Image 1 (cartoon, rainbow, N blue to C red):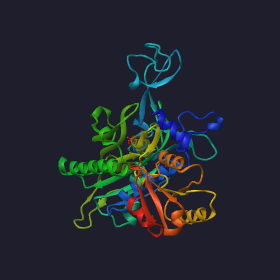
Image 2 (cartoon, rainbow, N blue to C red):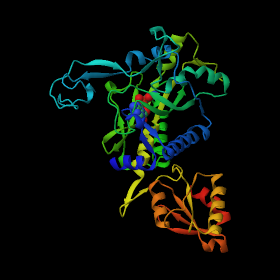
Image 3 (cartoon, rainbow, N blue to C red):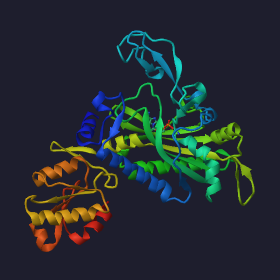
Image 4 (spheres, helix red, strand yellow):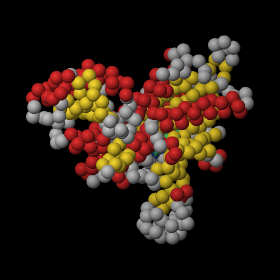
Length: 430
Ligand code: GAP
């Protein structure tokens, strides 16, 4: 973990937030390479689950919603963690994470205050007056917008049940114990789908959809994220530990260096949310089947993915060391740069001119790096460390035969490729 955090800081994937002011505990900023990796993850997800499917549409909703949303969703009453305070060091901790009564802050034994429930939602005020009547909340999950906008999506599209609404966006939780780099923060991003189905006649009706989404999530983790699958486990969540809305939850856990913890989740939310929003808003949120005329409140299967945990798992799974050098074996689709272009010698104008032309031409279609410093070995090492899958070297021979050397990050194998073929070559290999 320390090595990945150091690499992130050294190469500009992720650095501490507000660093010139001494930082802000557990806040992190994505740098030039990190934002590319994160955007590539979000784009791969959107392509796979929205653009390539006919049964899912996307939305992008406001972060601050009408406060009644959180009454209806049960978050005001139930979105809480048990909090205790150490009477010696005054550190605050989640009661369910204390072991044998020992304070994780100062080591004191049995020095805690009684447990109280702490609501994790971030409060704010709408407008210039800070009054309780103006209190609003930053959304703690993106999901609620999919329920609140359900009627509008039905009215403006031709979606027929079963169908899903997807969203990628920020969520905020005033976590008692954030930590482990970008694993648990107070501000993070989610990628969520609410998949609406008819009210099940029996358990196998919803269980079939649940199983479908389980397979979809495994396939995303393996094929898109490129996670080390020996570290991924499914965990059935017991009723007592499930969120207030869930009839069944399966977590996808990952063996992080700091322990096995939740990566993603899959829940059967029943009709809990739509029923409550119908009740609290007084609006009709039922669906009328165009064939049978039957009207019902749909049930929901919810697969949910954390973006920041996806970034962390992509980095941890890709991190390798060979002969003391770091190689980040990211899926080419996720890598910040798809290729780097090098003129063999920087001080030969005709070489630099040809390399520059190739670089600018490729840049129109791919994220491409340029490097003309130091020797070729150093340039390869620098690109390996940030996961660039291909390095393209323009040499004296290139001026004659109009070909370049393309070196593969993982095998170190070199191919001689015609300049006019490089775009196709990269598109195919990525
Ligand atoms: N709508 C359902 C929901 O929000 P969740 O399990 O509370 O479910 C979904 O959150 C995902 O969001 C988690 O699986 C995790 O990947 C991510 N997540 C949750 N809390 C987080 C935090 N404090 N920091 C980073 N990611 C978090």
